[in-house]
Length: 186
Image (tube, rainbow, N blue to C red; front, side, top):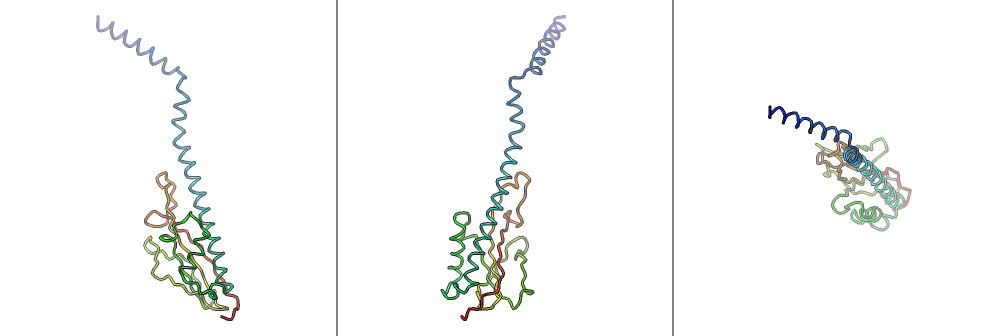
């Protein structure tokens, strides 16, 4: 009898507390924010990383195009630019976005005609293959391809957005300029 009275009293008390909890609205906003905050922050972070990736790609493309003009017009050959000074001309334009000394790789090659140019990025087994990179600016009238590669670190793979196209989790940015040198005499 005492046990049944305690059970009735306990269940009535639990029913009152449970009913108040279900009807209570004071913390509803905090709970809703807690449920929506993580997906919202993840989406915001993914949007920022996507924008930054495309911005970095455009900055690299613009710097390569601008520096390739030095080769196309013969200024680089006339000034006796080396691979290091040509790379520095690109690095001066990209600013602090890139780690130029350790992450920017250049490949400047001449070709006999435009049909023989291959613009496929040199990726072997998920790694950038730097073994065949050259630096030849050519002479007047030569066909030249200037390619710059940078391994951009990605962070949003934890959120399910995977921009990595290399095995180490980085995204390979590639910028290329293909042109025929002006007919300068040197």
